[in-house]
Length: 373
Image (cartoon, rainbow, N blue to C red; front, top):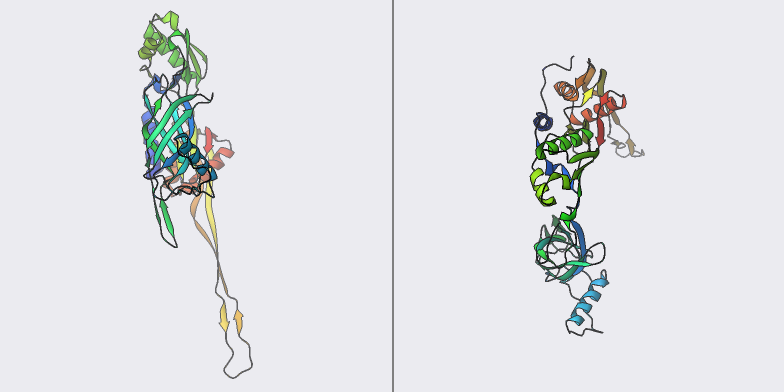
């Protein structure tokens, strides 16, 4: 049977084909969605703090003694002496607070934070984060976080069983941190600006170079490698770097894509690019199923006899061959989409289709980068 016969495409694969077809029609992408501008990036912040106000779902003091120690230190700083006291709260949890300081953030601006437990607290629902400094990689404090936590998930517990939905031990505080320190960086003093491609490709980098030079009207962009395009800010005639970026960031570019096949074996998902090609190859697929069923039978002796009760083993063994495909051949250079369409027409299941693609790749007939997840 030919692979070019009438076919029926699985719904999952149909969605994948349509998505790639739309990209393959020459869709343009804005420059700022393809590259990162040198110096325009965020910085990670982290802090250690306490969440209070929990409804008995906080840390157990025996399993998280650092929670008691931190709470005692905070109370003493507030003028409450708890030295020598047995402090056993159940509504307090120790947490790590993380956030990202956005580029060009100014003192007084607010950022979102994420709060996650580090002890054995069961839930953060209803809790409030108390004043927590957030530090950067250099150890300096750049922001301070505080506020009520929005935690997802739910926990229900009885005497003999409990059920948890979602992740109640993690939550967020929108605009929960205020920036206290700015990162010193004079962006407009930059004389040469580099554009870093998120997906390095020589053809895409060349298109970016030509597009910027055409837009500005002078050769200010130069491709350094597959992942970098450098701009000469002084030659551009712009008043500063910010003006230059605002002028070029919406430049439409048609990016080039590598031929790639991505397979998720857990869900049976297959994603492929339109440039994937397959050489002449023959495919044969089929499955053997072995079933063994034990049905032992108990044999009793006759009444008033001196016989013994015996267990007679009985086994039912069957070997069946499931429906598969015979020897199918792809003639000449064909796209992988055409091959999958043909295999779908023959009734090949997604899991079997993944095995076939791996075998074609091992035979050297699949010309694309093969990614297994």
